[in-house]
Image (cartoon, rainbow, N blue to C red; front, top):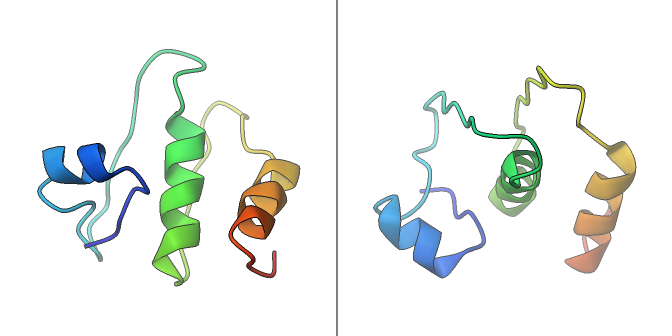
Length: 73
């Protein structure tokens, strides 16, 4: 399972997101969808496909999140 970075959310999802499964995340603007997706991708340590339909992806934010976990962005 791929951790979301949130223990409680992982519990609700039965351990996190299933690897190799397409997962759609949707909801109102500014509710953390992009942050959740990017964080899960960073924590996976693997290649991740991210489809941004709202134009909210920020490479700078990805860099900040990776560096906060001592990872090379």
